Length: 116
Image (cartoon, rainbow, N blue to C red):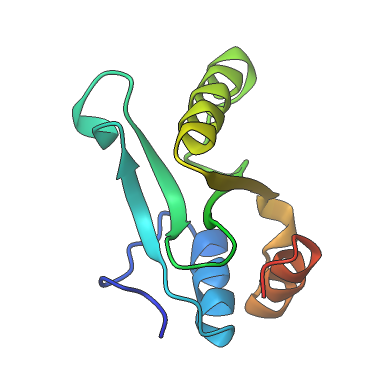
């Protein structure tokens, strides 16, 4: 169990989160496109998508760090992703990058979100 496809991490923090998901033996996609991903206007890329978690799938985005936007643009993106998640019965979890400085810290952040 672990990455369903070869993982692609956009940051050290995402790599730490991927290592923690591997440690928990959870299947996941990294850099998962929704609504067309980066190829289409209005599309987005989730940092992680866990399609087989029960009772519902989980989408995780790392907040802050190099690739993420700030202010109104990030708020709009988060609202759009939250709407997609709600429409598709997916739980949306945002984890601050500062909580993911190593794999052990990432594991604690996942446990705090009740992802085990």
